Length: 274
Ligand SMILES: C[S@@+](CC[C@H](N)C(=O)[O-])C[C@H]1O[C@@H](n2cnc3c(N)ncnc32)[C@H](O)[C@@H]1O
Image 1 (cartoon, helix red, strand yellow):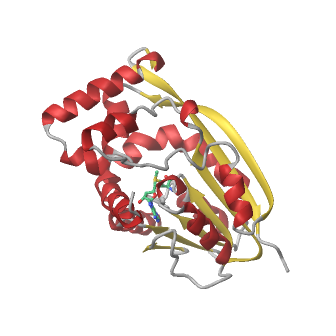
Image 2: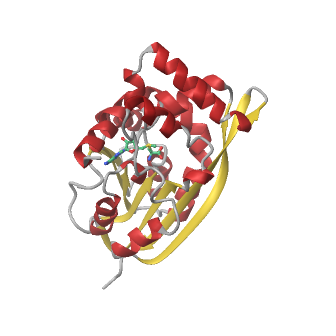
């Protein structure tokens, strides 16, 4: 797919997803995001860049960790995400946090400006993740560290049928590279190619809890990567896609709700000091 087209789908799709993202995903994603925050081990006073920050589910705990003498810059491709994050920062009185609209592949920040760069569940949506990881490396000080969380292999993701269900109705790939970095050693290899050293990776599985069909469908269709395509569907297409999707996750039913398996990978790397 043409990279500019993919960027537009992401940018305007996530604009649509904003009102649903936290209500649909926050509970399910919290354990994986907490793991990223633990691995990053951010210290008081550090300067942190949060790439593809969304509504700030990782930005906010990290803002607490850096304290008033630190700084967090949260960037995202979607204007609506950035506006929402700005409002949340203001409400929380987080003066050490700034939010700006930026593409992960082309960060408008100087070289060597941050001690830590984080990217939680953002690299799957970037048309050329290699460029985004190189950018993460560029903006780190020597000795700085980058930590990225991505979804794992397709086979480890219980909601993966969502993509073919959407793709056949829009006759194109809605999110063509979604599982690429989380497969095999791909994320680690990309970190190596970007120049990172002392790389460690952690592949882990979690169950994503959804209370009922409504919540599971809201997360899949309204609150994430396919929101732009979903927004354009008529009622008939929506009903068909919903039926098929619920069929695809039926094996993960747990009473009224679902516990859907999810696989994730975290990679951490350091920028050399010399
Ligand atoms: C699943 S959300 C993750 C948000 C947040 N980091 C979290 O863990 O909750 C994915 C985010 O990636 C952003 N995104 C997609 N493509 C991007 C790009 N090329 N540059 C920056 N952000 C991008 C989307 O706008 C969206 O906010």
